[in-house]
Image (cartoon, rainbow, N blue to C red; front, side):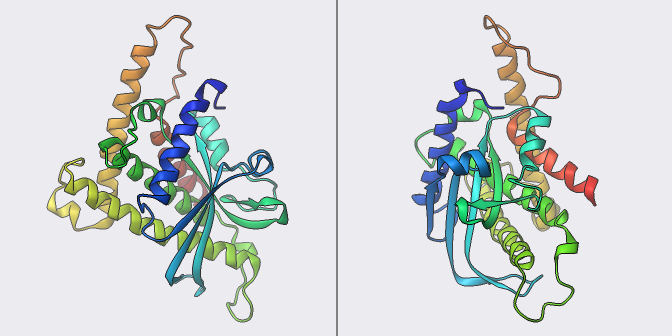
Amino acid sequence: MDGEYKKPLIKKFEKLLINGVSEENWLKFPAEVAKASPSDVKNNFVDLFVIVNINPPLLDSETSLSVDNLTFSLNFTLEQSREEIKSLLLKTPDSSLPNGLTYLGENSVEIPRLVLGLSDYDLDRVSENPNSPFAKKSRFKLLSEIVAELDLYLTIFPDSTLPTSLEGDPSPALKNYASLSAASSFFRDLLFDSIESLLDLDLLPPPPRSVSKVPRKLLAYAEAYFKKESRDNFHAETLEKKSRPFYERVGVTDNDTFVQILSLANECKLTSS
């Protein structure tokens, strides 16, 4: 788990996200951010809540439900261990909740829960300037983590809880599925907006034409580029740390936090399908 010595970096992480959402229009719609209460942190495994007001509402094509308010929670981590990150991705307050959901306070409203992670290396270098290269790259990394996690949670959502017919009032399970599905479409659009911004700023090398015209290939290209950059930074930082007194050796399964979250979300999805 994240140690006490990482608390300043976690606070910096939270500030990056809050500034991006509240002041830099990262989500392209008006959004409110609220820090989680101590009970939410302890019992519901969240650090921050985000409420996005969407106008016009999103129509979820799978459930035919309209979504005009996306309320979701965030759990921040600097973990580099595969097992710890996998545990965070699949964590729920109780066994009755599908993966990817948690509770909002004590009234048991169910909302999506997303795990966001950046490495020590990234957070040491994130500038207060939201237009810095590291801040721009961080936005892409966080959005790609969200999209990968939502794909995972939709894949493993228990079909047995969904109604066989969409007639009548929607069930709680159908509403939860619609929230995850609408959020997936919403964040995927933001992710491609981020890729275009990185290309415009020369922070991502131009892809081959055959890649740029196919969204799936373009996303894979951008993720592969930043995963390699993150791995290289992680290993360079690890070598530097080894020269310090009392350094605790990094395990062979450890890697950059962003790389681990993306890889494990995809691995868990493949395993369950």
